[in-house]
Amino acid sequence: MMKCKKNIIIIVMISILVFSLGFGANAKAFRVAVIMPSSINDLAFSQSMYDAMVAIQEEMGKEEFQFVYSESMFVVADAAAAIRDYASEGYDLVIAHGSQYGSSLVEIAPDFPNTSFAWGTTVNTFSDQGITNIFAYEARSEEGGYVSGVLAAKLSQTGIIGVIGPIETGDAKLYVEGFKAGVLATKPDAQVNISWIGSFSDVALASEAAQTHINVGADVLTGTAQMVVGAIGVARQRGVLWFGTQADQTSLAPEVVVANQVYDWTVALKPMIQLVREGTRGGSAYVLTLANGGLKIVVNQEALVRKTIQDIIEGKIDIEL
Amino acid sequence: MEAIIIGVLKSAIRLATPYLYASIGETIGQLSGVLNLGVDGVMLMGAFSAFFTVLKTGNLGLGLLVAIVVGGIFGLLIAFVNVTLKAQQGISGIGFYIFGLGLSSLLFRTMIGTVQTVSGFSPLSIPLLSNIPIVGEIFFRQNILVYGAFALVPISWFILNKTPLGLSIRAVGQHPEAADSLGVNIVRIRYLTVIFGGMLSGIAGASLSIALLNVFQQNLTNGMGFIAVALVYFGAWRPLSVLSGALLFSTVNAIQIWIQVKGINIPSDFTLMLPYIVTIVVLAAMAKRYVRPPKALNKPFERGE
Image 1 (cartoon, each protein chain N blue to C red):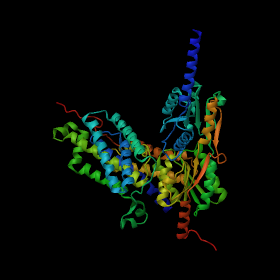
Image 2 (spheres, each protein chain N blue to C red):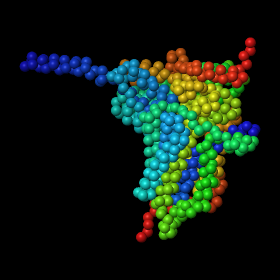
Image 3 (cartoon, chains in turn blue, cyan):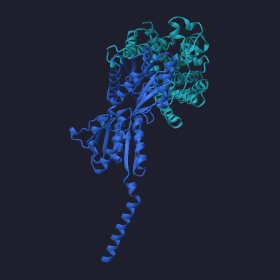
Image 4 (cartoon, chains in turn brown, blue):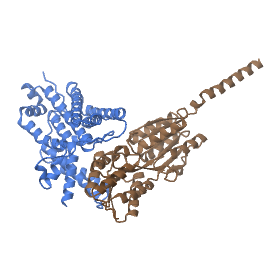
C-alpha cells in the first residue's frame, strides 16, 4: 500500500514536470493591456506605444509576451472602466497611456495589489500616497525638440518658424519649449510663433493654423500630437519644411519632413517588465532621453536636399565664393 | 495690414466650407420636419469614401461622386428610420452619428491602415474675378468645393422660397395635415430632403478629406456636424442667416489663430473660446427676433383618419 502511494506521488510529480516543460512558456507569458487615447495608427502618441508593444513581442516571442489594447479612449470614464476590466482579468501590467488617466489609476490601483500599472507621460508613481504598484514614464521631448529647433533655425530663410501644439501641457509643452530654445540658441533674432489648437483631434484647425503661420512668413513648421496631420498636409502643399515628433511622420510628406523625434518606449517598458517578473509591482519612473536611446532623431535626407536645391533655383540662397 | 485681412478671411472661407454644406442640408431637412443629428457620422463616411476613392484611383471627381452616393445612402437609411419607422429623431440621429464614426474608423483601419495624404482639389482661379484686388484673392482663388458651398446658399434660398417644391417642403414642415389634404406626398418630400441632406453631408466630409485637408484619420470631423446643426438654429432655418452664422464662427476662429500666431499676449485658452463666446453673444443679442422652428419638426406624420 505504501509503495502504491509512493508510485502515485512519483507519477504525479513527473506529470507536473512534463506539463510545466510542455506548457510552461504559455502559462508564464507576460500579459500586458494598454489603454490609448487615440488610434494605434495616429502617427503620433498612441502609435509610439503600439510600435513599442510590437517590438517587444517580436523580441520576446508570442509565447513569452502577449498584449491587448483599447484605443480611442478619449473619454476618461470609459478608460477607467477599461483599466478596471483589464486588472480584473489578471493582466500582469496595465498601461494607461495618457496623463489624463492619472486620477483614475489612483482610484483603481489599490484595489488590485497583485497587478502592476503604468502611466505617462509623468514621473509621478503616487508612492507618496502609499501606492506601490504604479510605474510612471516620461519622454524628455524637449531634447529632441532642441535638436529640431537647431536644424530649423539653420534651414529657415525668413527667420520665422511656426509651432502648432495641442494643449499647453505634458510632453507637448516640453517639446515646444525645447524646440523654441534650440531655435533661439542658434539664431537669436529668429521669430518663433506658437499656436495652440486646444484639442488633440481638430485636424481642420491645425491645418488653418499652418496656413496662418505660412501667411505671416514662416518657412519651417513643427507641431506635436495627432491633429498635426492637417498641418503636415498644408506644409506639403505649400512646400514648407516640417519637423515631426512622437513618431516618424516622413511617410506623410517625404518632400518636406526633415527630421522626426521618435519615442521608443521599449527603453522604459523592458526594465519595467523585468521588475514585475521579479516581483516588484511599481514605484519607479522611467524617462526617455537621447542618452538612453529612448529618443531617436530620424532624419530624412531627401527633404533637405530637395529644399536646398529649390532655394538655390529660386535665388533664396546666395552662394558666396 | 492688407495681407493680414486677406489671410484671415481666406482662412475663414475655408473653415466655413464644410459647415455650409452640412448646415444647408440640415436646414432643408428640418424645414420638412425631420431633425437629423447624425450629420457628423455622415460627414465622416463621406470624408472616408472620398479619400479612399482618390487614394486608389487619383480621380477627384469620382471621389466626390462616391461621397455623394454614400451620403445619399445614409440619408436614405436615416429617412427610413425617421419617416417610415417613425423613430425618435434625436435618439436615432445620435445612433447614426455613432454608426458613421465607428464604420468610417473600421473601414479606415482595414482598408487604409495608416494616415496618408492625397493630392486634393487645388485652387481654381476664376478669370477676371480673381484679379480684383483683395476680394479676388480672398474669394476667387479657392478650390471648387469652396465655390460650391457658397453657391449653395442662393440656390437653396431660391428652391425653398421661389419654387413649388420649396413651398411643399415648408408646408410639410409647418402644416403636414394641410399639405396632406392638398395632395402633397409627405413621405416622399421628407425622403427627398433627408436624402439630399445626406448627400450634402457627404460633400461636407469630402471637402475636408479631398479639398481642404487632403488627409483622413479617425474622427476627422471632430464634431463639426454638431456645430452644423447648431448653425441651423443660429440661422433660423434661413440659408442666408446660416451663411452669416458659419462666416461669423469661422472668421472669429481665423482671427484667434492669427492672434496666437502673431504672439499677441492673450492666453491661448481664452482665444480658443472666442468663436464660441462671440457666437453665443450674437445669438443672445438676436434672441428677441421672432424665430419659430418648423411646427412639425421632430414629429413623425400620422394621418388623422
